[in-house]
Length: 61
Image (tube, one colour):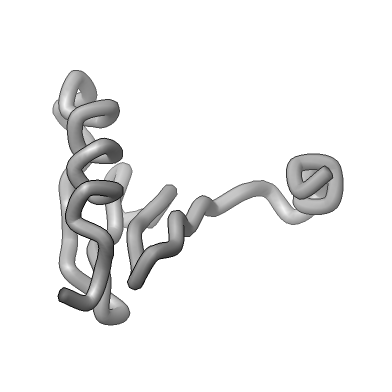
């Protein structure tokens, strides 16, 4: 297993009410796409989240 399937399932359940969101296998994990842009994903045991660069530090805090 290249990614945590339970994590991916949690993301999928949270996103399923939005019909424009789709899953795409990539980078050894699964990405969740809005249009052609990845907004989050699961890789190994990690949650990947795309955030605006100007908010990166405050969101990490």
